[in-house]
Amino acid sequence: MNKSQLFDQIIRKQSFLCVGLDTDIKKIPEHLLNSDDPIYDFNKAIINATAPYCVAYKPNLAFYEDSGLKGWLAFEKTVAYIKQRFPEMLIIADAKRGDIGNTSQLYARTFFNNLKVDALTVAPYMGEDSIKPFLGYKEKWVILLALTSNKGSNDFQLSEDASGEKLFEKVLRISKTWATDEQLMYVVGATQGKLFEDVRKIVPDHFLLVPGVGAQGGSLEEVCQYGMNKTCGLIVNSSRGIIYADSSEYFDESARNEAKKLQIVMKQMLEKYL
Image (cartoon, rainbow, N blue to C red; front, top):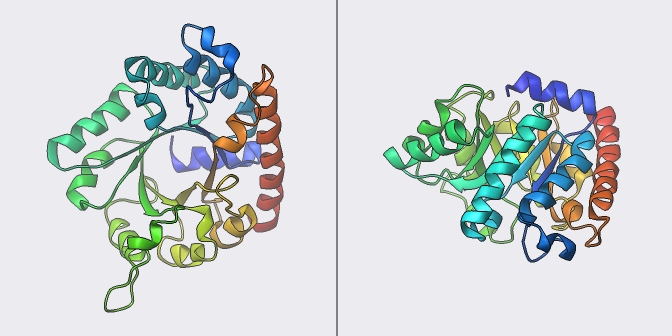
């Protein structure tokens, strides 16, 4: 999926919502545990319920790897189902990969060639040669961690060098020379608020993947005020607030309602800031 196609979908759906498929076998509704593949069945129901209101899905690999081979197969089936049933969706593998040489090449091959996801989260710490292997795939996205939503982000990301440049600013400034805004996105946590202004000074045209709205306390209004650009430039993720809205047999209806609520607010934000 290219940037133009992503923006077209945002305008058509009046939404920039990404549903995070953080599917924990210990949290899904109890009645699904009797199924042959409870993780996949849960995901399928969530996807069917929320598809009208979102533009992307983001399975977090940790929640699948935790269940071993069954979990990995559920992840593969989930990706295949989205591509078959809702081919317009951006599929983000939240795997936070990143290594050097052949290792990165194999990670890239796994996710882009074999699993055929559209985007992959990647850690930038090891530098350009660890990222380049992911950038060799047409219309595939690398989403670099830049400024995250967790409390510990202060430990390193906000530290300054002698010239006053923060580490996250250096990551943005240097990495944007590796590829265009048609290949690179950045993770910027919703809890960072007004720092979105500083992000946009360096990468005004890139899409940002924004976790932290909802359960983590980030403000959607603040994210849009400081982070939205002429092509929206935001993919805002919500996981727990949608997929675990209800643990009854009506969990999918509750997920639909929560996704719809966010879509309505996002429509207002697009009208206000775009």
